[in-house]
Image (cartoon, rainbow, N blue to C red; front, top):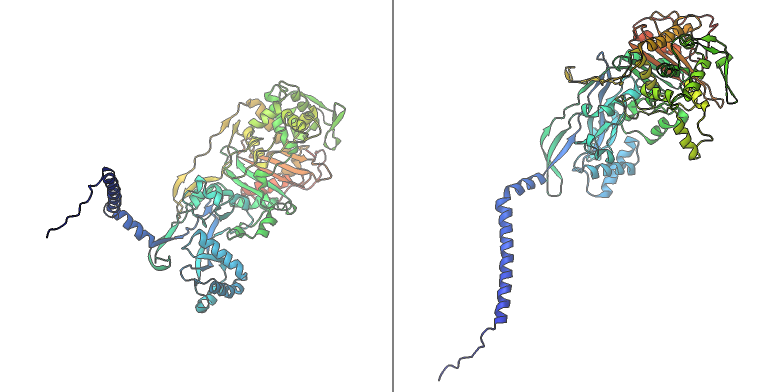
Length: 625
């Protein structure tokens, strides 16, 4: 018997190729998996181990208190206070939405809030910062804290923490200057200036708080906590103490600031006090004002609308840097400079003031229909002759390119921002033929430029728009020998003990080529206006102990509206150190309201007791000037 062997066919070349390809692919895939695992576990093992550990640790931000703001003498203008805030911790909050609402419902009457509003507030903050306690309500009374503490079993996850709130001890005094703080917004987080800021942080939103936010903000601390796989906090690991912001010293003198606010308190208006040589601002304010303490917490929408409403005087508007007005006769300093430097007149050129000027069928009258006769520049400034300056406006319109007054207005700082270290400054407007003709072509005005526009510009009327700070810069330029200063408030950054960390350099001044003889003639006229009988501000400053040079202004707004009152004063004469500007929107004649306001400010500025102007006749004085 024999074994019958089964004969099998030999493997074909095609099958062998397929087997080889499949085996090769399998080998490659195995190699990829093998080397990937080797890379992850051997080469990158330490890295992923660290990341895994980090996934078990969360940081909870502890916000740093902001730095204080002090005046030039070290008086605290803006500080911090500590208050209580009701918070909800995510790690202790029940997981069930129904149980969460029960907690919110118990909390609602205690905080005088709706349960659904509490839920919305908490969920919004958890979405932005998942592991940090959500602030439900800030600045709660101690009784609330005591009640929650005594009934902790009824308020799981609810706690009360101590937080730093911004404090403005003088309320409405200097509000526009100091500014406000608020929670950073999503668009702001994209800006370079907010690098390192997190959602929920409070930053400067206006005024000095905004301009110097990087110094005042400080450096947040953090609390490190461990969490489980579900993200629930288990234990606190470490805490990094926050560093408070730096102290900021301003050039402001609080006593002068307070005096200025009181001087304009009866009307809508503004004031500026500035060093004519350096541009240091001693005081700057606006009325109506507001209490910035309401921004220290989350401001209610109805409060913001009330403070922004023009019907209430728009208290949030800083009229010192954003209020754009016709200036009345205070503009005559600019017109005089342009006429002298442009060669239209000399200091001794005599023009005749017969009470009116007739041009193109229109009669331009002196204020009050006064007649001053023949007079040169000094006398024209003293009595504020409108006809004298009407003639300069007429001549300037036909001289050269017709932009003589406009050009010098821009050189002296009008029609563009001054560059002060405050946000939101307005540019203003010095009207020109191109400006009006462009509006006319777009059907935005009823007529093109005419010579009458330049005549009105020469006395600060018509379409001119200037804010008080710009006018202060223009007068300072003439007073200091032709240097255009850049107003500034920040002096230096200090530590908590007042030791200097960083001093801010004074901004560079721009030099204007103004003939000293011309400049002195203008100052002589301003001095005569304040010190000699017949001068427009003589009734106010004739008996003032500090020698003053100054100019009144009465801006007529028409349409039955009250005239706007202006005064610009330079003191002490003949070497002025300060310029003081005040304007009152419904004040009427400059000599009656704005000039007395400047006198009140100057009396505090120079540290003197003042009983006020001498009562008596104002005969011979042009109150409209």
